[in-house]
Each structure stands twice: as C-alpha cells, then as structure tokens.
Length: 186
Image 1: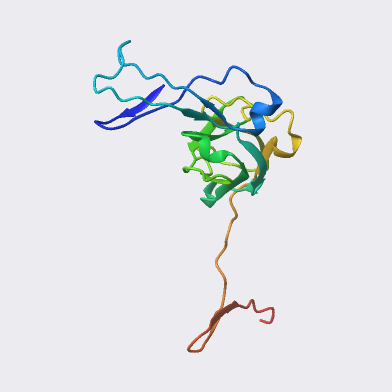
Image 2: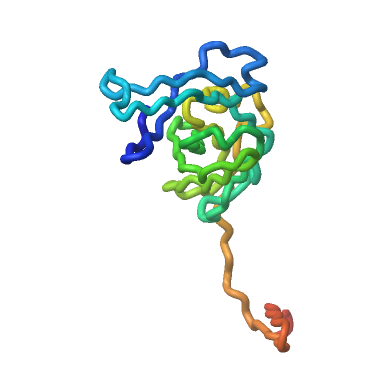
C-alpha cells in the first residue's frame, strides 16, 4: 500500500514476509526489493538493492490500565520493534461491539504513545473495554485473547469536584498552599 509519493521518495508498506518462523520473529531478513511503476522499472535507472524485513513488534507493557473519559491521558506502550510500524492505532471495543480508536504517535524502538480515544458516551459506572492495536499488517496485537494481562482497560466515570467552602491561602515567595476548611461549629 502506498502512503505518499514525492519527487524523491515513495512511502509504502510491503506484503507480509512469507517464511514466518520462530527465527523470523527474532532476526531481520534482507531481501531484494523490486520497484515498478505501472509495471515498468523506474526510468532513471535507480536500483534499490536491498530491503530489510524487521521482526514483528512485541508489546511488553501498557500503562495506565485505568482512566476516565475526559482525562486526556496518554497510553504508554512499551516493547520492542515498535519503530517498524508506520500507522499504529489503539482501539477500545465495548460489550455492545461499538469501538473507538485513535492514531498513536510515531513509535521509537521500545516505546509508543497513544492518546486515549475520545468517548462520546457519558459513564455512570465502571466500564470494561477490550483493548487492541492495529499495527500495519501485524495481526498479533489485533486480539489480546492470548494475552490476558493486556486484554482490557477499565474506564471509570469522570470525577465530580465540588466547590470548597472557606478556602484559606498561605502564600510565601516560593510556596502557595490553599486549604479548604469546613466549619462544624455554628
């Protein structure tokens, strides 16, 4: 799939490596890459001599695992081989099979940051959502059934903050403390 084309560069994904073995998952494979345009080789005679298939990414941790809808929290994904992913996405699927997703930031080798997907529903109780990732053509992380540790995320209702009565302020040049005191004597 071609993502973008300029005068000097074409960004695309390749088909999945056909010889998937345990060794493939742990090492990089160099292969010859053949580029054609409308079935013909490039006119300028450029020759791309090698291409590197990298191991599929491995996710080792996802934090936080509990959040609330309006938190604007970032989901931190750690692992290895994450930098080989072009268009990472995080997805939350609810019991009613509705889902929401968001586009993750460009990952480094061992870390990826994903914004918490926007929820349009109002929560009045805790809600479990099934967590999954779309990592280009890698299907391993589309369903976490084999990884119960990562299978779900808990979403709790937004906190309700009420007005404090009688707020007292202690302020110095380097510190400010605000204390709400409720009077029990009338």
